[in-house]
Length: 368
Image 1 (cartoon, rainbow, N blue to C red):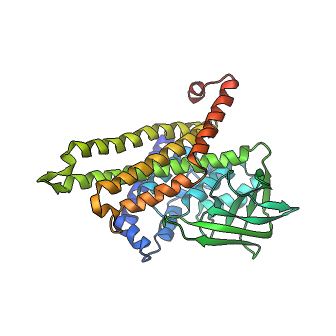
Image 2: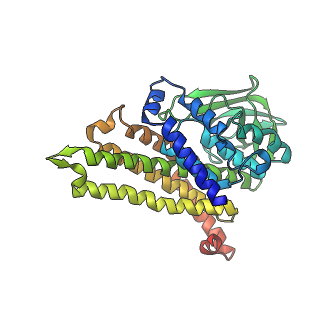
């Protein structure tokens, strides 16, 4: 039943997003002619997507990381706008580390689509808020919409994260200012705090809480990237089959075939890495953070490569606003930049691998 639920969820999302977030709808949204982000969010809430990974006591299907992978892959495939990565990653994080009181207060609202969440753009590796007693001050960039009802922010001194705070932008002390970015399908805001009160403060002396949030965001970005890369590469290959030069479809030229195969191969290789990351996260194994970091780095770079090549393979029209490749290329570049620099993620993974090895384990043993 577990696998059946995930497959049913995937099929449902694919059908709905194909109908409601097709290329024409996406271009209309980017031209400022529709509120597609609100429409997709509302539809996702009505169909229970927001609750899919949550425990059953909060109305969820309890399919965890596997369900989130399916959801983010489907959303990425259509380059769907909306604060899904931030909100769903935060919900999974809260379901794992939050107190019963915090979960009961926030998870039902997230499950019903009534609550959006903003999280740091750089999870655990960027600016942090300072705290004096029970209040916070400072600013940082957050991923999420300007109407987010809950904010998760790192707190500490200097560059050391000591805890994670939950805030509500309900007063003048906490504000979210939208920023113009190159990817119009997502929002980044600047969080300003001036002696702001907290809902909760979660101490994180060993960094495990922050790494767990990073894990879920990294896997979400990897799934989003591979879903998007699969779709834009398929669109491009279809285009190559219809564009004629020298009296024949350009898809018949060997050089073009090789470039198409390179795209497909890069996506296929990263799918295996993502699958390992999702499996480790679902089991909460000691190597879960390592695999998530590697999956994010590999998938976002593959997406950037594929989307850039799709622009080139479309020829001159690939650079125009009317075609889809630029939408995916912009999404790819933002995915690359989020969470942390990919080189830093690979350095973290190498350190984690060394630590696991010193404990007498191997990643092969942990992955079985």
